[in-house]
Structures are given as structure tokens and as C-alpha cells.
Length: 411
Image 1 (spheres, rainbow, N blue to C red):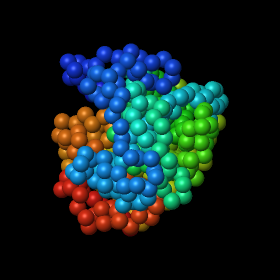
Image 2 (image 1 turned 30 degrees about the vertical axis):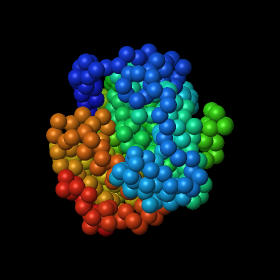
Image 3 (image 1 turned 45 degrees about the vertical axis):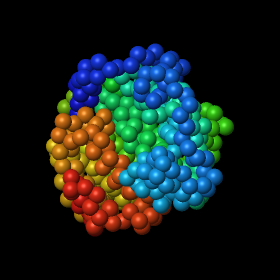
Image 4 (image 1 turned 90 degrees about the vertical axis):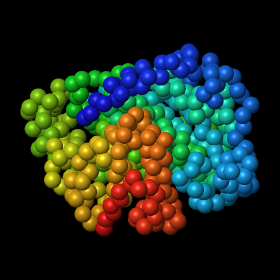
């Protein structure tokens, strides 16, 4: 798997050193910076409100006067999916410990949750408790907005980050979803983080990463604070995305099958330090997450050295593949292997590997890349979660969102 994060993040840190805001790391587990406010100015501002986003059924204009979209809070599928929704984005973080399926040991991971909120707070998070990853567009412990979708619950989107990254590395997409009334959850994959990576990577870890995502979804039904979002996240039907190494997890959770003979060959070659017959056998049943109704692999796939020739064809739920023209991750091969399956593939002209996470790409403007990712992801989410026909033209290519997008679809 790629280790592109470290170099690009260090370069980002160097480039932003002139305007980096002072911050004091919070050690409570929230990852929050409580020394500054969240308007990005470096000064205290706790008075800015979100407008009328209480879910009361009123219409809300968050664009300032008559220049922005108007949101009917009784009809969330009428909201323009290419624009941010009406809600402020709340955030919480905590840790959970579970028994690893890979080695039977106790494993502790971070849980990151973004959700629709009614008003801002004075605190923004520092992902991984690092000031470098401060998110001034997210508000810790913001009051949740009531669900606005017909079943009275929040739709759920789960995400798996790339190698040596962190749960919030695709926070632009998480914020976009939360602003539209979704709850988004992403684990921090312990032992494969920006500030904590294990090398050589054990075989057990390839079982732990998809399990981390399952555990993160479970946490929405077992919240540490029963008064917060309790029972309101619809975890019975979930959409899962993944970036880079996380796309490997997305394929696995969608039902991509493994070839244990190939995995044993990896063991025999000395690739993993912890091979046992029992650990190899773990991959036989795969890691299909039955709650996943659709998946969005971004800038990555499950390689042939894990699944053989037919492993991808065991996926039977809808998929939206995303890639960039400057980052050949083999999606053409994956798309060809999926003939007859419900797969849509978008390729962004000029897009890099980082277009789908940190946005660090010299050949595609960051805002443009994020905008296209967010537009297609939310459109796909609405189509799969709510059978929203208003997005069909975008997802079948008859409505062109941008000349930068090449869209292919099957069957």
C-alpha cells in the first residue's frame, strides 16, 4: 500500500507554517483545541449562529440574504446535493476497545463522528490531537439537530482512511454529508496512523482494519452518552467509503472475497511476521458487512494478489468507484472485472491520489476536486439510501456536472 501521506503532509505543514495558528493540544480524548475559536481567524468568536436549522419544518436561507439556496427542512431530498446543506457540523471523538479477530488481543481505536447540529460551539477539533490537523469548520459537542428524513433517523455513512492517515483525513466529505443531515463515522486505524505506524505490517492488521469500520458503526448503537444521538442513527442500512488503503477495506466490506492460497504464498515469502494457519483461515469467509447497502472506493482497490481473478465479482451491492487521471490505481481493470455488476466509475481529469483526502494535488484545484467528490458521493448516497430519482441523470452521465469528469456505468 502507498505511503504517500507522510511526505505530502510534511510539505503541507512547511507550506502553512507562516499562518499556522497557535494551539494547545487537548488530552481528554476529544482531539479538541480549546484555546481558539473555529472561525479560522485566530480570534474568539462565539456569537455566529447557523440560522434556523432546528428541523421545525421552516425554510432556511443560509447563504446570506437571497444569494444562497433555500432549504425546506421537511424535504431534504430537494436540497442541492452539490452545495453544503443547512446544518452546522458537530463532532465528537472517543476511544473504544475490542478483541482483535486477527490475534485475539485487545485493540483500542479512535472513533470520529460528524453530525448535523443547530449551532456552533467555541471549540474545534484537532484530529489526532495534532494542531496540524485542526478543522475550523467543525464544532465539538455542538447541539444535534433533529433528524429530517422520513423515518425519523439519521442516515449513516462510514469511512475508512488511507495508510498513515487518520479518521478525519477526508473530513471535507464528512462535513458535506453532516451538513445534509447524515451522521458520518470514521475510525482511526491504530498502528497505521500519521503519528503511529507499524512496519512490517502484520497479517492480523488486514483483518483488523475492516473490523474497525464495523466496530465504528456499532458505536452508533452503543454511544457513551445515552442522551446524545441515542437510537437516532439508522445503522441497519449504511454506505461505506474508503480512500487508498481504506478502499481495500471498502471492497472487503462489500463482499470482495480473498484467495487464501495467495495469502499463504505471501506468508511463505516472509511478507508478514505473524503468519499462522489460523490467521490465514480468517480470510476465507471474508469480511462482508451485511449493513452495507453500497460502497464508494476512492483511489484504490483490492489487489489481485489478495483476491485472485474472481474476488471482485463476489461483490453484489452497488459501487461508485472514484479515481484521478494522474493516479492509476487499476480501476479500469476492476471495472472490467465487474461486468454485469452494478458499478459506476468516475475519473477526475487532473486528479491525484490525494484529491480524495487531504486535497494536496498540484494538477487539480483542491476546492474543485472536493466539490466533485462531494457532489457524486452525496448523489450516490441519496440514490442508494432513499431511491432518490432526482440524482439519476447525474449518476448515469446524462447530466454533465463537469467536463473534468469521465463517467462509465454498468450494466
